[in-house]
Length: 591
Image (cartoon, helix red, strand yellow):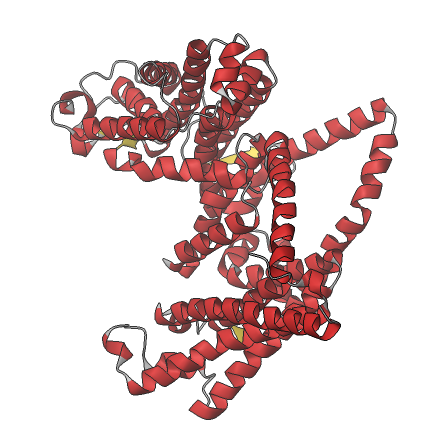
């Protein structure tokens, strides 16, 4: 093949790839417009007087579409990268021109409520159709060209710039949350005044945020290996002291978090702790033992209802009236239910096991709603009057508490429950980490890899599976007991199938089988949507888009287990030669 022909093929491939991804980006941009996000976010500025949130969404669509297009051609040279990225950005913006043109001919507003004159004006940046259309295409092409230049940069510089841009967008998006959190501390008010005006970031604040995060990320990438090498070269007592110093510092930050972060974020952390506790339990069943359980919400419900039945003074069977005496029974009931579920499914694997456990979860929910058990579980009306977990004089009510160095602090029940969730999660993390490296944990992982081989090696599959179901159910039951006490009531609507899906999703997103991954997954799955409440129902759209992108980029999870990461890397290494051979054969004209 001659050099000219080879270069022509590279150009054609770059243009073809850019056009395909540009069309996908254009459809995404049209979806953003027709869902009403242009009108909904037009009044919100990311940077005051410079760019609104609706404009940021369009620019991000053009930019990341072009970035993915250019990334596919990084190894083929700068010309291919810039051509693919610029074309992708231009085509994705041209789709919006097409939408405006179709809207001028057809009454799209009769089908799409958001297709109004205001939407078209915002898409055209309040220009006339010709000028706005040209400007839109030029904007998309410029975004694509910049994205291509970014692809060509070294990875350290590229990550630093992307991190700075994400920081600016994040602080602009979470303006109300940041202001509310910092407003509780008068000493931090100058920071708020420096970063924000009445609507959006200040210009100098946005520049400062970009530089700060870009420099921090770049410095970390430059010095991380050197610092790790120096740390490894330190004497063992020094490393131990540094490790314990980090543990103490982290413990202090965790204890002071609800005081400094305020009421709203404390409530969000309560929800994160609840799902983290369930995630750590399901991680034993799914991540360690490889048993797909889609009915995990059943153990959560059993723990909550057991505490409610035993403690509620309004309930006929409420005989204990003390949460601390009742919660062990809730955990025990969940363990018994887990073992009883495990017995009939010992020979099931994969999809069949998932269907049976899903049915078990639905059975528990329907029993809670049934009239048959209404005298004990309250039916649709649930159980009320569950006591809080008071400890002597410490009552879980709003009160003023004097703390050394901090003075008088206003504590709410959400902030006090934070410590209960924290204690439960730390207990679950300790047990999970110790069990993982034990004989039982190794048996679980062997069973996860291949049950037949594990049985041939002498592992008792019956006892091993029942231990996984029982221990995983214990953490779910513990989460349910704390949840019931926090709300002081239990209702069947709190135990829908979606709870199991959320818990399973946080394990997969964070990194199946890895405890730090479960922690990160809980923050992503439940913490992030809660922090995005100020964008309304669109937060689920952003959240879903983020999950799709993340699973495409890192299907093994954010923080995968070392063994799982090695398996995926080996699989990819096996696939790369096959893909290269296919490309060579196609280039030579062979089928």
